[in-house]
Length: 348
Image (tube, rainbow, N blue to C red; front, side, top):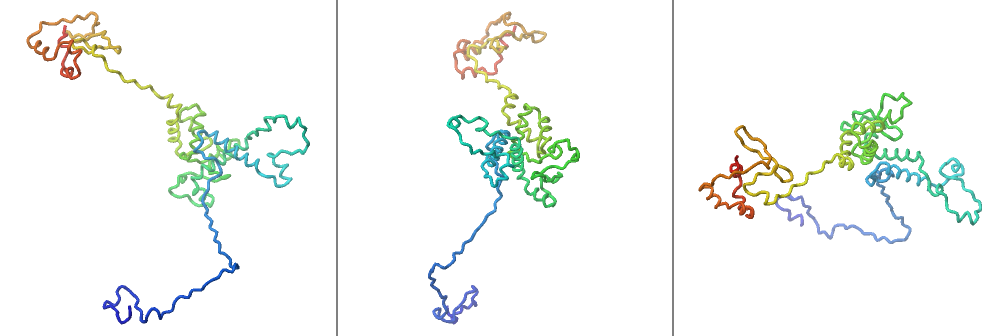
């Protein structure tokens, strides 16, 4: 639009109006660039830092603590065996590497089978100790914020699980400070137990190991032995949950279910016969109503006396049918006599 055609509202829509034609306005110049091969290509390197867990096997894939511990120790041992020797001085100081002898072997020596100790490398206790320390450090990854606060000497967050505990970081592990550090004859784990979370998968394997080690005993025994080395948050409920999921405990504490009873045959439900009182379906005792009350009498000594039927009894018998008809009759005919007192006709 041109400036002469300004609307009456004064351009409330905040439009721009041209005084001259658009062809008279300066245009943006375009420069044609030719590639000569001397230009430097701009490259950008983007690095993303993500928190990675420690190089340990996945604890979810293991059902036992001992299997996870030995598998981790084997991984550490394999890494050490695959490590190259850098200098000659480290070869003699490194106990893992053995000395190499460049002696010529005879044909008999080549054909001889290898000894068992040469084919199988034993697992030393130091590897188990390193593997346990590595697994405990991975289990404490849920306390990253607490670890940073302790290392930087800052107070813990108010919502932290370790707020009420006096903790310290020693050798990469979060431990509880105790008052028996002067007792050097005691083990370090007993003086300063390692803090663990009961919801962690590695902690669950450790608790299951203690539960099996002490023969599926009571909760107090398992808790007492665990606290000699570890301080587990929510230990009591975790031990109960493990005992509740233990298959051996379920079999030992389980009770057999009572099988459902089957339906009785029609011959035992005939009209006019005394009801059975024994589990096998036989009647051995019968309640007899006397002037003094109810007494029990053997069924072999009971005689049923039938009184002279009246007109009402004959009419009722015709309506409902006789005993033989009731035995063959269906369920609908038998439902007519529900609630009728059979013992009235068998009074002695």
